[in-house]
Image (cartoon, rainbow, N blue to C red; front, top):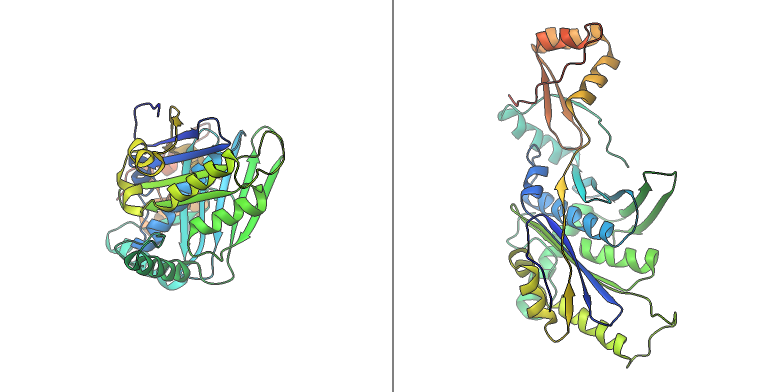
Length: 349
């Protein structure tokens, strides 16, 4: 197995040599932590968000496009809406919206720490367990863990929700959208259904996240060169069955902790694999001091000054990344001075 050095915050491609089977692996640590720097979620919502971020990178990696891919979960459980976005050059951002009760609880906690402010929409585009991710039963213990994980997932997304994948090209008006129901036992299973229905490609997905890392693994059966379906006992069909077996045996703890080469050697070691150089992944929200200043100008000087008089400062919070931008009295006057283009303070108070 040929390989390159592993780096944090990257997505890497691998293939089974001489067979139409490919895979992608994404590993995020500091980028995942930076994405959540101003967000507050329960453990189960946090981990589902991490899985979605990893999934958005894996989905983008399978495509050739220039633009933005948006993975959106529209739930009817504790999570009303979850959006994870990844651009073609692997810049990610994400946000989750909970039901009113859970959102109020998080807002109360934020207020106690002083993290409050006016929330403006800067463009969103479209359960406490030791192992809150999907597991795959190979033993009684694994089956119990899988059942518990499914209970958490169903509580988060409810019944009747859906997954929406939207691909928007930056250089044209091209827009593609695929929709599948949130009927699986995990986000991984829902995405496998998306690939089956929207891409017509057999695909297996594993996702895991915790407070420090968000990780994902995907293997995919590509079409035969002949364009015809492979015979059951053909080399490519056997290679795909080996890939499925390998990814089925990956446990969440292994996915989070092990480097790609170790993971592949332990689960795909019977095959010759080629692992390619990784592409960096970074957190990047579209909010900025200049953009916030522009939004405040559209509100008008009097309305902004009214807020200033009532609250002592004007604080705007990005709806996507929850980053606060604070303007004091001097900065507000600069904001509306003729020809002035001041930057906002980004300190948190």
